[in-house]
Image (cartoon, rainbow, N blue to C red; front, side):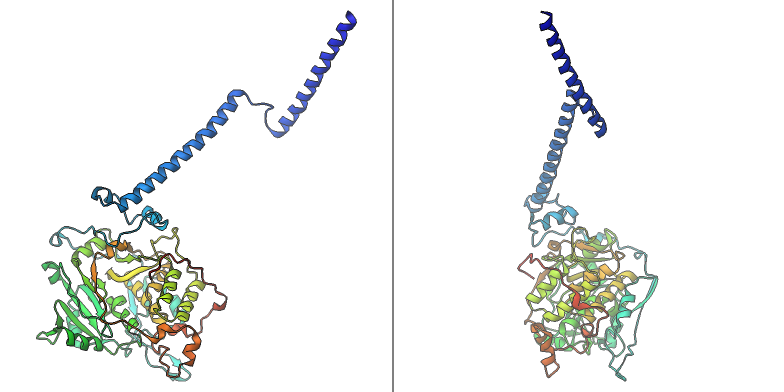
Amino acid sequence: MESNFLPSISLRASRRADRNHLQSRDGKEGLASGKSYQDSPLKIIWKRGFIRLVLVGGIIWGLLILTALLFHAWSCQSSIAFFSALCNKSSVIYGAIQSLGLVTPPHRCSIPVADDPNKIVIPQKRSPEKFVQSLSYFMEDFTETNGSQSPPLFGGHITWQQRDESFKVKPTMKVHCGFIRNGGAEMAQKDVKFVKKCLFVVASGIFDGYDTPHQPSNISARSQKLFCFLMVVDEISLEFIKKNVTVREDNDGGEWVGIWRLILLKHPPYDEPRRNGKVPKILTHRLFPQAQYSIWIDGKMELIVDPLLLLERYLWREKNTFAIAQHKHHRNVYEEADANKRRKRYARPLIDLHMKIYRYEGMEPWNPKKSTPSDIPEGAVIIREHTALSNLFSCLWFNEVHLFTPRDQLSFGYVVYRLGGLFKFFMFPNCEYNSIFILHNHTREHSSKVEWVKSLDEFKKDKTGGLKESRGGLGLWTPYPGDLDSVVLPSVKRTSKAG
């Protein structure tokens, strides 16, 4: 019996020793890895519960954000006034959900203007000059070419170095800004005398006889006294207008069509009518130097909102000095360039060259991380206070139009980029832009041989010299101080069939 008992004891002892050996080995491994051999049941339950809590909380939080975005998108589309009022169309959230295709912006929407123009308080003080205190302009254009002096250009023979220096903002600056002496675009003395009294200006322009003036509507008596309504025309358009509408003459020889005072620009500075039209549009502060505020509206448009309400809404309410609408279809400059080529708005190879220069100089495609809602504006309505920085921006914008293509929408975002965030402006929703005017058709379609050119060889083969502009766009024909052959333009995703 004792013999049977002893083996059983020795067997249990050996098993216990084996277990102790395993425990000690595992214990060493656990110590080496910095973990205990086995977590307690409560600790395991706590860990698993915490992970589940985090996962469930993240899912619930994501669903709440998605619900809020969908509600915001629905409110922006809603026809119910209470819900549509909740939609902030100028917010970052609205821009994000619009870029995702969750909302289709309406063509027109109400503009949150004041109720009565007679109650608007006009600021007594101008906006402070933060970055530029003194701005002056080059007036002479002396350039020696092959031993002979070339004729003065309206925008000047701007060198690449001068262009680069003009983007470096300083308290005192002198830049090219059109109106070089003997470069064209002269006003008659009767018109120079008249515009000197204009502190508030509504400006428009008609060139090459494409339109007749459209009379603004809903203009208060106060605004009729406060604003000068100035329609800038060339000689071809003036003759066309006189043949088609009634033009009256005042005692000083001034010519009027309804509320519009016609301002004749003699000797158009450019070969291309579209480029001529940029002079009063972008250089309003140069054409009417006494003006403190201006509203530009394209010649094919009929203004239907009181201009004083526009100044209060877009400038004074939020202390802006420059306001322009966001483009309906594009935010990316390279997409807009592609649309211009598709719609034959200018020579395709010259648009590509223009974009290659911008790409070489660091212009990135628009993305939501940029500080501006878009790089592409709807330039047919521009609302400005003529501060030094606002005037500088207009000069630099015009210089790009003078040097490259007349498609000013391609240059706007680039100038904003080169000024490095110093130039602040209000880019308002496109649906508000469409509520400012009624659009009328041109009397005829604009067409130019330049717009149909598909290769640079076509310019070289043209014996008449009629394809290559002689007074504008010369930056595209001047050797660029950089290797543009190595530049690859960003790929374009066409977000809209329209332009």
